[in-house]
Image: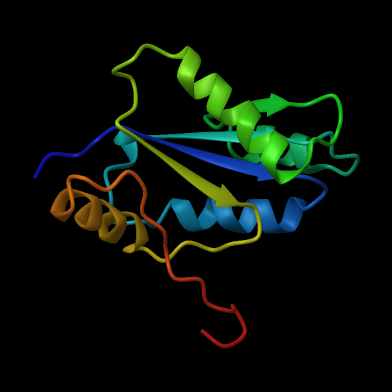
Length: 133
């Protein structure tokens, strides 16, 4: 099976515990990790979010906005960076809020959906509450 190159874009602001949990969950997804790049867009956090990401996840790409642009502005920052890369660098972009934990099969299920529906431009996951999944 072919493994597409994917960029994961995460936006965060003052949620160090959440984003660290998310990044840890991404280590366990059922997908070749060498085909994933992770970009965290920090919206000018004033806690230790950036420091912890750099310390615990040195391979994660990090963009630090000078002000909080909100979720939409943060994702636009990440998407703009992605579109500046060579055209064939990434086949898919996966946008994640910082307060999710990813199920190990989530990405593969999204890719299966896209492969089975070649006219689809977007796929989304089911969201479940962490306390009551």
